[in-house]
Structure formats: structure tokens, C-alpha cells
Image 1 (cartoon, rainbow, N blue to C red):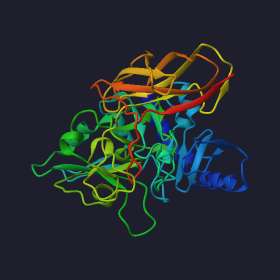
Image 2 (image 1 turned 180 degrees about the vertical axis):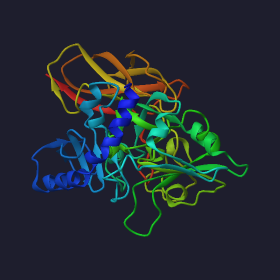
Image 3 (image 1 turned 90 degrees about the vertical axis):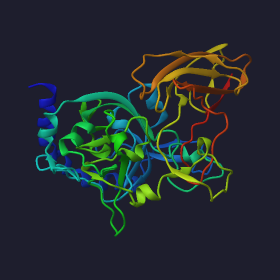
Length: 411
């Protein structure tokens, strides 16, 4: 039995495991209500200053809890210092509707494709027989770091942990669309999942232009870091759109539709719209501006080996490490600064895991005298796009990509 046969066998047995999903969520909610006593301090512009930590959610280790129904779970920054690949049990969670799938019958599950020249209905065994692909890619929420927007904006107040990097395995979406047959009038491809709203509103559905969907990179994934997709991260299938924000990465994917368009669903026509300006930036308080759907990610970087606000023994060269991402391109360069951006020096880059992956960097910070220091990192991607010094602002709290600062003191 090879690894994929094992994966299939695990999927078929998974229904018994997932039957406890609802109980697991309920137990997590009860534990939070009673108070676990574990908190993490986060420097957020609009508060709160601290957030509860919990490890009671199904398939998850200790996570920062923003909301429990549906779960909004953030990855602590310390996790990103351990590896460029985020462990499945520490990978962030973001759902839109409270009615998320908590019991999936893997044997009965079908992925359907409509709107083509022939209808398609695929079981999990069917999918695992198709040619497979694999690559590393960062999954980042459009609102990652929203809690740092000043002035404060509404929405989930994430710090920097609404992101993760995994090696995804699955089937190219192109393979599935070719099997369905593409009619002459098809212009877009829509995607829906098993989660459902509790009221009579649009379900969470997204779409891509046909040429993007057929580029050979967009994937229907069944595995993540060599394991089945966790329940809370989209079991049994998830759409992977490398280089794009995770709003397009539909979880618990069960339906694909070829359409003539346009897509009038709320989640495409009105939600996740950003200013059609450089860096999605408008003056704070602006509400009227040209809009465009959010799509590709810009480069970002974070120092992960040192915590903000740390007091450390002084040394002239402080070793630091972190992670960088090029967005929809690879990482070309990372620079670091120990004086708030007045001077910069190149960091050493770790192994290249692919253009869509996190990439490790390490450097020695030249601190000078004892006292306060402002540590920064700055990423340049393969297209030459450089992280800006100035943070952007928009009313949705989307697409923050500026150079981040850690304030430390050496004694």
C-alpha cells in the first residue's frame, strides 16, 4: 500500500473521526466560557491587548482565539520561527458562516462539476487516481494584520498570524475542467463548499477567470504537509490559488461550475473589494473610491526569533531570524535594520522552497549601545517589488504589507 492508498484508506475512515467535530467545537466553546487562564499579549491599535489561547479545537494545538463560532483561530508568531512550513495543527482557521461541515461522509462525498459539455461527479477514490501535483504555497487571509490598522477598521482583528505555509498535494484544476469539457460561452469558473449560511443570504462562493483557472497551477488539494486536510482547514478538498489571498481558497470544496458570467454573488461582486490604487491605500476615513476585487499578495517579511517588547542581554551582534514571502513571486532579497530603517544590511536567505512559499532568513543585527532598538526586515520579490515603509489604510483592513517593527531593549 503506497502513501496515497493509505491516504484514501484514511479518508474513508475519516467519517467516524469527524463525527465528533460538533462535540469538539462545543467543548472548545465551553472551555473558553469557563476561561482557560492562558492569554497572549498582542500590540493592537484598537485592542484588546490580550487574547485567549486554546488547544481544545478539533485537530488543533494551542491557537489564539478571535471567535469560536465559526472558528477564527490565529497562529502564534513563535510557530513561524520553527519552520518555513506551518504544522497542520497550528495552521490558522477562518470560516465565514457558522454552519461549517462537522461530519463529512468521505465514502459518499462527491465533487461535482457543472456547466461543461458533460457533467462530472468524482468520488475521493476517483480523484486519487488522477495525475497529481504538489507545491509549497502561503495561505494568507486578506485581513491578516487588520488589528494594526490605524485608525481602527471593523472586521476580525487579526495580528500577523492569519497565515500559514504548507506543501499542498492534489489534482490540477485544469485536469478536472478538461474532463468536464469547456463550452464556447464559458468565461469564469465558480467554486462552492459545504459550509452554509444560517439565513437566506448568498452562500460563500468565489470565482476565477477561465484563463486563470486553466493555468495549470490552481489545484484541488486533498493533502497538506503530507497528511489529509484537517477538518477545520477544509477536509476533504480545498481549492489552492497560489499567490492569491485565501478568500479564493474555498474550503470543503464540493462544487465547481463553468459559467458565462458575470459573477453576481455577494462574495465576488461586493465583498473583498479594495481601493484600485497603489497598495490598496486611501486616506484614512475615505469611503468613496474606485474598487477592484482583491487578488494577488505583495511581498512581506517578519522577524520571528525575537518577540516585540523583549528585554535581552546586550550583545553587539544580535542574531535574528524570520520568514519572508514574495507574494505571487519568489523572494529575491531580505534586508534588516536595527535602527528603525535608517541603515540596512542584507540577510542570508535559506533554501528556496518555491516561488509561493515562505523563505527563511537570518542575520546579525548590529546594535551599538545598550538601550531601546527598533528591529525591521524588508523583502524584495523577484519582480523587484519592495515592502513599503508606510502602512496602507483602507476601510476593509485589507492587504497590509508594510515593513513591520519590533521594539526591544538590551540591558
